[in-house]
Image (cartoon, rainbow, N blue to C red):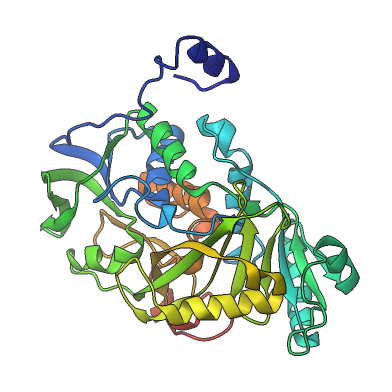
Length: 416
């Protein structure tokens, strides 16, 4: 069924009894051309583009929980392409362009809202760094505006411009950035992939990877053995665990990243705003809640929950930027397991096992990269060659000495 205003109207006349399930619940087949481990945004997007762009429909996506139970449903919904380095800039801009046409492409309302992303700066050195980043963006055809103090005050008058420690001097603004409804992205890609013949198999945990003569032949799962011609890993924070089943050690650590939402408020934050003197970012959802987050918890964990020290850190940074937040109540919080790479940039590459492919190391940037990640990963799987915008995301770049250190802070996952 194709969603449209007419279909909504006609089903309303029938008491909304004519809607079909958005995707099937198939039993796993004995063998697939491609098996994707991980039913999050990247796994589902990969399956969708494999079927739509490359005609490979004999595909299974294996998810150990329900769709949306992982990081795709545990993030702060921000999309942007305001990156500096050549390896990152064109890739995230490709993702932004795919976001802009996504809802029409897979016929699902993902609530794409290009409300603008503003990164505040608080010193001359930070202004110079943002000027450099903005110039790099403009040279790559990406929208960027450097706003002075008065321009930021006109846009966001509720910020604490006169904070003695963190005076707001201006900001780097990307008008095309914004937010997207995170779980709707999973549902839209799932529905799109399913309509093209992909099997989406939930409650199916991978427990082992079977190899013969140096090739992967399939996966052991909680629902039995499933054979495959190619195996694609897209397991986010559990990437190291799954890769270890194939004897592959990854340059990745798993950390918890918490996110929060406040009670519902009247609209007052039109944009996504980030604090330049600390790690804090905030936007307002359509239901009125403020959605915000900060740093990772700083220790390795596979738990989808964090600690109170990080809650305090996020609250302090938020109040330093917007003093009125001190009167707002937290409604709930959640945690996602981040696959933190050594340089803070992702990996989309083939492994030393010919038919085993890897998509991992997304750190904070996984959600905004969902469309481009799926498209480039599908290209790699279908053609055995990397897409031109993802060529820098090689697995061996750490051994070769070619890190993509966007923040320039060094080769430690907790620093990114």
